[in-house]
Image 1 (spheres, rainbow, N blue to C red):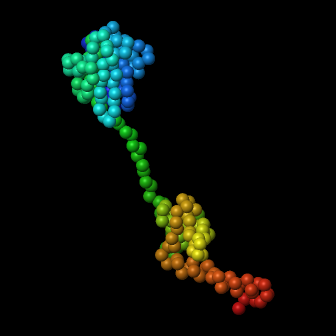
Image 2: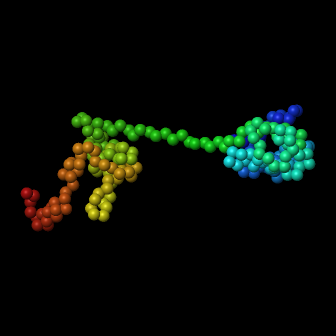
Image 3: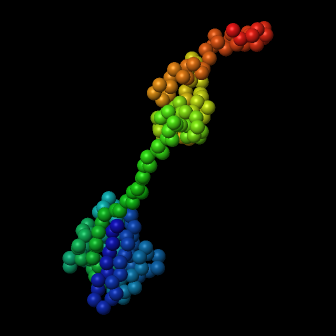
Length: 201
């Protein structure tokens, strides 16, 4: 943050927090910062803070603008330089923009509950073995919890019910899924059996 500290003798210390861009200083009320001092002009100077650089421009003030005792019309103001507007002394304390970056905390996924045989349980059904694990949030679910999306060509995409990420079968569960899911031929045979009324073989 760019700050100007008023340090004239006999006056209380006052800090001016400059905004990015142009800042107008003077006695008039329409300035960005009003300085009530008899030696300050109505529109005394213009201070621009951009790209961590502070420049100051005198606006044809009556009593002048000075950096380290030298009169200026326009100049760069460095941190630590003394600035005098009329008879008012100021010091630039900093010219760095402070950017607040919020802290992002990544929480570890909950450890799945284990069934008596050591297999992970479904997050939603504690007594049912998990078949899928989400590759995004790493939660485990049973076959009934994951959402299925059938793609062109018949391929099935399994989606996590918690974050909609892709779910992959847990190790050793691929064969279980293949046994549970009937093939097209199996579905056709079951349909014919129901239509014809034949008992299961």
